[in-house]
Image (cartoon, rainbow, N blue to C red; front, side, top):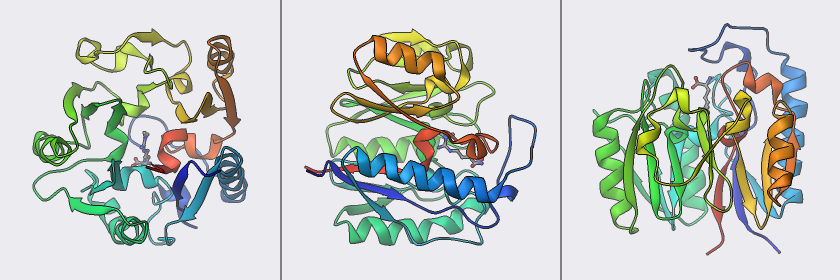
Length: 256
Ligand SMILES: CN(C)C(=N)NCCC[C@H](N)C(=O)O
């Protein structure tokens, strides 16, 4: 049984030079990062996903955070235009991978900017963070693209946080796990559970009752289990030093 394709991109040898905006820079252990990425890929495979690698972009330190380069929705791939110009050379490799996967491809055009980490899909609702990386023009273009798939785009103003999915993500039943102080929670339409550890608001539903989350969120893993889901825990400490989280390291393309 395969749940679909999971796109990932191996870390660049220059990973340690990745962007840091809201936290202090600390040393990244590249060997450890490679081991953690291997374990992350294995967790996806174990959960039933066919892991496919986007061609490495060694000149791009942040290229492992492949989520920021594309938004996939019902057979459509919206190629983003990352808000950080130095991340734009990551785009061609992702575009090739989604074309190879058979998706229809459209793109965010200048002056729009949009990072995939700002896009949270919950059923037919698509929340989009309006912060440092995604602008109003990018949101408008995404809204027009996703209207063709029957989706409603709702902007969410962000405060002092990199991406929307740094502050809120959703469990398989649509319940949001959030750090409400980082965003305008009045924009959210689904029930919200507040978490008490930063990485606790970063989860990826992997299909069925499986929920991927980081080892740095042990209390949330217990909460997830208590709600009847099965936590799949991965250590991504080296990526967290660069403001990454479990969502950023893959793009899931469910089988239709
Ligand atoms: C949901 N998140 C956090 C993401 N999708 N991306 C993280 C990118 C981190 C990278 N150093 C940067 O600053 O771009």
